[in-house]
Amino acid sequence: QKHHEALFVATLPSVNNCAYSLNRIFLTFFSGCSGILPQNYTERTAESDAWTLHRTVLLGKLDNSEELEVGDSVISLPRQMPMSHQDQEGSVGDMPSSNNTTSDSSEEKQISATMTEIKLPVEKPLPEPIAGPRHIYIIRHGERVDFTFGTWIPYCFDETGKYMRKDLNMPKTVPARKSGPQGFFKDCPLTNVGILQATLIGEAMKEAGITIHHTFCSPSLRCIQTCTGVLQGLGEVESQPIAIEPGLFEWLAWYPDSLPDWMSVEELEEAGYNVKQDYKSFVRTEELHDIRESTEQFYMRSFYLAQSVIKSTADRGGNILLVGHAATLDVCSRQLCGGAPRNSQEMTRLIQKIPYCSMTCVQDVGDNKWELRDLPFPPVTHSNNMRFDWKVLLT
Image (cartoon, rainbow, N blue to C red; front, side, top):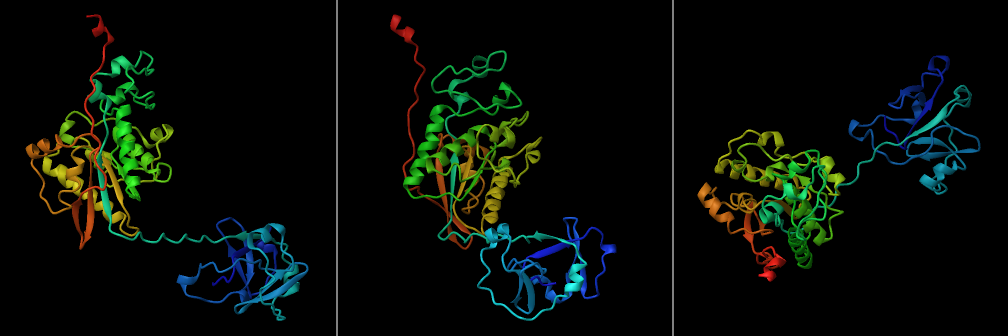
């Protein structure tokens, strides 16, 4: 039936004890309430329009009521609505009135009903597509603790698992994880310099007028921290949740024994990272276990991931940020731009030229074609800074 207004169900203590004529329609609803509705308040309509919410008014006759004509039906409305209803819907004084009466007062007196308002769900309109050519920004993570300090876990955690930093470039704190300190062995955090690198990139993107609309990140902690730093520099860390995508993890051949024990979404949220809870990854973590991945398969996985990300965001459009590892810059862009996968020797030589927080940009040039583009800001460069020992001054 077509509802000119919101649906109201008259709840009855017992329907069997209530007399009503054939021109009344018995109703039930998911709330558990039962009731009846005058049939002359309704009309048949196409199924596709059956649940469109046009307006919300009370159905039924109350004291000091007036009858208003809405469309082809006559609706009985109170002259002064309850305060809660007035607050929600405002005044109805401008609505047209009618002297026609269709309700049977004798029947209504037999119904001692409680009027319950049921608001039909109204879908939010989809956001407008984002104009302009699309860009994919692909970045490697920043400086990592283990490559900077070597074996660090035995020296930075006591027997109770309490963390103590041994260098100012080490993070002040590390996130708690169910696997304990050993969880950082294959999944280490960034150094403070690494976080600075990521923040500088984000600030440069903001100054260049770049906006990110979709963010996808490898599940590695160093990548999540890099992604957070970039978004911090962009000023979008609160408004841009991170989609954790296992498909962005690096080449599985470098992990012959087992994958890292990544932090869960709940652990990441507890640590303060803004990650999507309801995100369904294109590549599941289970698909990466116990796989001897060739270089070509690594390229194909990454190409599939890039295509999936583009397709899933096509309706809205906008720019995409992919945060991964050194090889991610090539494996997620090469086939997208028409190139062929490299062999293992070529890829290994290439990634030696991709330092921390390197970024590349791929632009949509139409007809499902993408091309590499120069970034509108310079890279971040710095030299190594060896550890200082004051005792050298005693020599």
